Image (cartoon, rainbow, N blue to C red; front, side, top):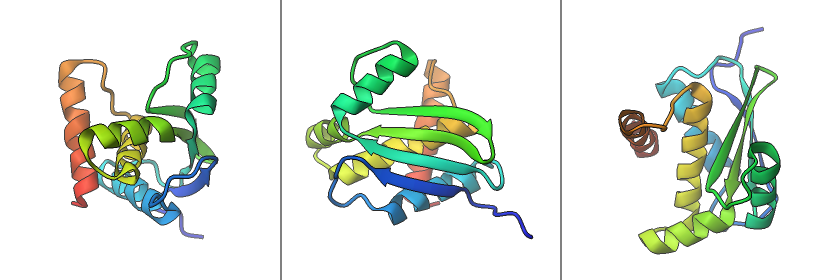
Length: 142
């Protein structure tokens, strides 16, 4: 049996966000995987959560109860390579500030999480610039 080149993406919306579709989530993750050599045959879960649930997980998993936009949890096993947990309420707030659709903001967070799982970092000025350029490339559809 041939191995899948694109990741297997499971999208679960625990919170609602009009315009954010499973197809769009799968497409941006697949694009990130193709452009930046994500592991062949990897399975990912992308979960959209409200702020209360997202912040509770942020506290439990990372010891920080504050709100954040996205968490990327790498597991490294192809059967579950990682999870991307997106905060719907932060996406809505930032989207209003940036005057763009909340679904587009949430897709940015999905891409950001996918790039972290592939190996991108954003913990320094140069790394952050690389991450931003990669996000833009993925979202542009190159």
